View 1 (tube, rainbow, N blue to C red):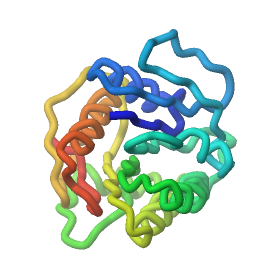
View 2: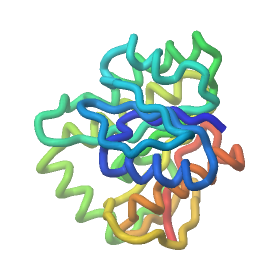
View 3: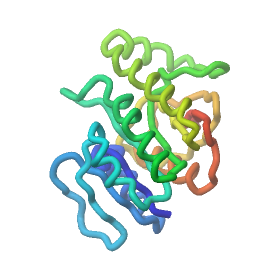
View 4: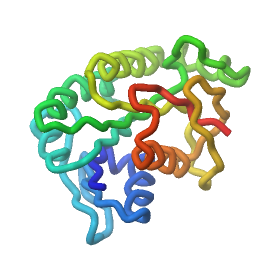
Length: 206
């Protein structure tokens, strides 16, 4: 499979690139800023600002699936996920790529979610400190839900840089407290390989 990865040089993106390459996939890595990836015969690095539609088009051209790992960092546009999806969706529709996987937080609620007790204080804190991040996650999900594409939106509570964990994917959770970025990458590859959770928003749990 040839996979385009948006925000490939972020912390989650780098794990996604490494995991996909280890699994034998072809990777087109979209990076903002300098390329720090080592050379690999199955890796192509493409300059890509996720808020630039032309660059998004260049990134995804010829790929089978797209993975968006856009996160919020200091100084980033508070609506960066939504802005990127509004630009990406028509590109995918034009070139005929249907499969897209995105990552967001469990603050993006769905009816019938089984919300774990640990989830409430963390998302309450985020909604107080950075309400825009939660709103952006919700709005980017709505863009995908109305796109007609075969999207999967993976949801987590708190990301870490730890080891690969055993995990399950359930449409309504519950979540685990800490999910490693290695685990996120493995979960993304699982839904891509299985063709599972299309037009759904599974939570990564234990």
